[in-house]
Length: 481
Ligand code: URQ
Ligand code: ZN
Ligand code: ZN
Image (cartoon, rainbow, N blue to C red; front, top):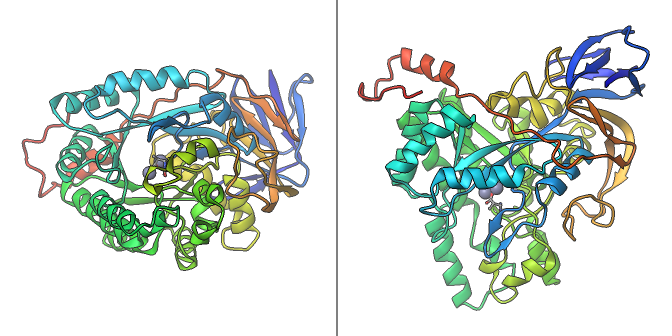
């Protein structure tokens, strides 16, 4: 089984060059002009098109049990939809219930993800703390290829991590060579504002953004960044949605702190007017956290990507259909939080970013694939077009167009936040593990073909920090492997 992609331009995060790409046994075997390959190789004609690393979405929640229901895209339908959009890997989340042993939750999610059509990894959420959590974090790093741990600073009375948990978990990440990531919203403030709004009789979706103003996110982002600074550990802020968070990231990065930021395709192009729509279903379909923001925040996020203070794009793909969203018909705080996007992220970003000149093609590759691979230690196996890398590729047709709609998308949800948006620049072919899984509208996703991808700890980086004589790290901190 081999494929040769002919006549295209290879576009990576750092260069663009004319070349054929030959894939064999699931890996990239050769890159060069007019390659001489076996006669039985399947040929993909990429004339006038770009050959790029397949997208990596570092933030999805397939079939997540959340707010009394379960996200409607499972690991097969969700990853299959991603392949239709040029996305060839996801990093999803294991989210233990408070007091649930991490290893139990991890094995549960591994079981669910077995049906994936594309490769996947897991961030593991720290939703509670005791010595067993500390131990399990070590087991996950040492034996299961987990190198990132998530902390929800929001969702009080559910999965919220308080400051004690943040401090202890960040320290543990430092010991293990893992990176902490955070959902940065102050959960206490959100809870208080929710109660106040409901008491005033504001029960509709318009209350959702009012309960989560940008300052609520900016405070938490800054707090998490400062805790990471004192704990001497890098940090990754997920779904940065507003100027306030970006300013906290930019300040820290300017001072040399190792902080990474992620933004969502939705937050880049959709504004908060959606919550003032008179139709409950429409407004509720957009309820996610952090909420969609007003226009000046979108401009800031684009500047963050352009200036290198935001490194990755994601979707936070977490689908809830209208009947599920209806749980919050009389109380916006009960609307399951989440929207979809894994199928549309890359085309939306190309159309809104590359076609407008905000991003070069190379920057597009960086923020849709390569940077996530490097931050989460998947590179160059993922996120590169290089010999020996996994043959996860997308052939991108810059002239192709598509009008995004729930009527035609492959995501298992009855709504699309990008509904009606016509994008120019779409994937004509997606290759996953060296197999053609998407070809001009024909999706050939295979249930269970996806593999769990281990992500080694970042010991090299942390050892370098240690060698610098971490002035505020007690000498007692040992390096647990
Ligand atoms: O907060 C998250 O990232 C999960 C629970 C998805 N929902 C959301 O509103 N972002
Ligand atoms: Zn989140
Ligand atoms: Zn999320």
